[in-house]
Each structure stands twice: as structure tokens, then as C-alpha cells.
Length: 219
Image 1 (cartoon, rainbow, N blue to C red):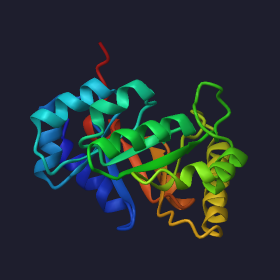
Image 2 (image 1 turned 135 degrees about the vertical axis):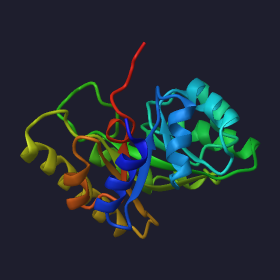
Image 3 (image 1 turned 90 degrees about the vertical axis):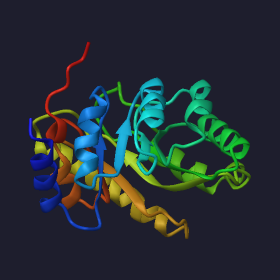
């Protein structure tokens, strides 16, 4: 598996304004270091324990993103170092991130996860809940978090029209929120199988794993 070639190929096809998060979950440190050696610095993990272990053993200038579903009781483990938390799906979780960020004298960037897919298994707010949360008084009290944008996962399907429409809807919500004078800069949508469509529909951050590192070996 030529990680270097894969990474260079993907980077050559995405616009400069799009951030590539290399999804390194389940892959060994040797694979991450290969990507690191050709300049990749942003990596995403979906399990807290694995994220902490990799943070402790890999170069400290790596920007770590938590991209999986995050339980409130696990926030404390990643609060000292995590750069961006993608899947924030409740006010309770935001409050916990804020509390742990404050304890670590940090401000942690967060993305609100919006449920755009047909599948019930995906987490996230609906459109009205996002608007209510961002306009709420509660969120104004959270001084140690910074909501910088939205994240969504499209339905896992071969139907490109459906996927495109789901991304389109999320981009429309993102644009609508800009009207509230919120400093939203990041729209995280698109993975290995659909990132090209996501970029066409306005994504500024893509999460790509298997197209860089090869198929996963789940134990």
C-alpha cells in the first residue's frame, strides 16, 4: 500500500481551501508516520483510548481531531490536546467539553453534527435544533469552546443524487447560519467514497481514511 502516493494523489485533486483529515483509526503508528513524513499533519480518530495512545507516542505537532461519537465521560482524556471535535450532538456534551477545556486552560474548537442521512444509526441535531442551540443563552455562557462549523455524514449508498442532496441541504443550513453573524468557517462533510461530491457541494474539510491507508483490518 503506497500511502505516500495515495496522499499526494488526493491532495493534488482537492482545492487548497479544503482541509484533509487523514482518518487513522485502526491503522498503526508506522502508517501515520509515513503520511506525516510527506507533510500530512491533521489526523482523525474515532476512539478516545486509541487517540490518547497515538497522541502520546507520535510527533507533537500533529493536529488531532476526534471524529467519532464522543461520550461525555471520555472528554477529560482528550481535552488537554485535541484540536477539533467533529461530532458534537448535544448541549450536554458541549457543556462537558467547555468544563474540561477550562480545567486545561484551553479553548476547544467544535463542530455540531447535523443528522442529514436516511439511516437512523447516525447521530446529530436536526436543522431546527442547531438554530435554537446557536441562538440560545446557554451557549453564550460557554467561554472555553468555539463552535466553528458543522459536520454531517451522508447516507451510505450508491445513489449519488441522494448523497448530493444531503450535502446540499447541509450547505444551505451552513449558509443560513452565517446570517446570524456566527463565525462559522468549517463545513466537514465527505469521506473516502463521497468526498468529491462533498467538495462540489461546498465542503471545506474532508475525512479520508481507506483511500490513503488502504482497507482497515478490524480485529
